[in-house]
Length: 189
Image (cartoon, rainbow, N blue to C red; front, side, top):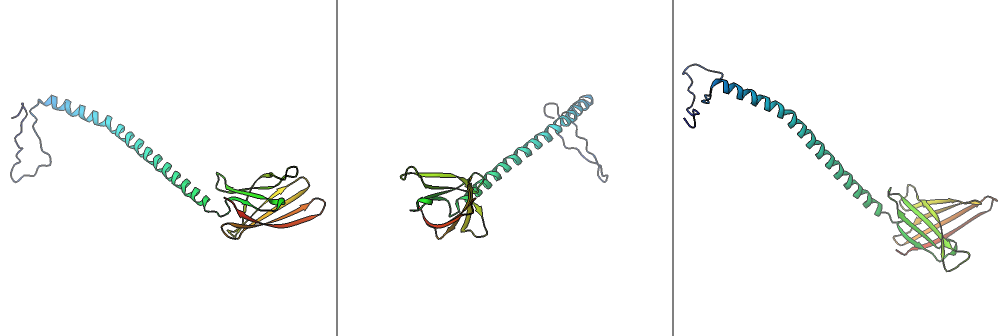
C-alpha cells in the first residue's frame, strides 16, 4: 500500500472469465462515485471545447493555405505577364507615329499608348491616350484603336523579332478619306 492506495494486482479467479476488472483505489466508495461524476462532468465540458478548438484550427489552416495558393497564383500570373515580347518602349523616326509604349496592367492585360511628334513643338512627343491591346490568334500580332471626333484609327502591331516591330496605321475619316502607312519601330527599353 502506498499513501493509502492499494497497488496490489487484481487477481482473477481461475477458470472464470470476467468482463470487468475492479481496481481498488483505497478511497471510500462515496469518494470514488464523486470522483467519477466530476471526471465525467469535466470531460463532457472539455469535449465541445476540444471540438471548437479543432474546428478553429482547421479553419485557420484552410485560410492560410488558400492565401498561400492565391499568392502563388498571383506570382505565376505576373510571371506570365512578363513573358510578352510586346512590353517596352518602341521608337521610330516617323513623326506621325514616333513612339508606342506597351505595358502590363494589374489585370495582366497588355495596354498601349501611341505618341506622335507634337505639331507645335517638333522636339517633343505628344501622347494620344491609353488603350488595351486586343489579342489575336497569333502571339506576334496585336491591335488597338482610337475613336477621334473626325476619324477612327486602328494600329496593328506585328513583332518581327525581340527588338523590331512593324506598325500599320489605318485611319478612316468621317469625310470618307482613308489614310494608311507602315512604320518600322525598334525597342528602346
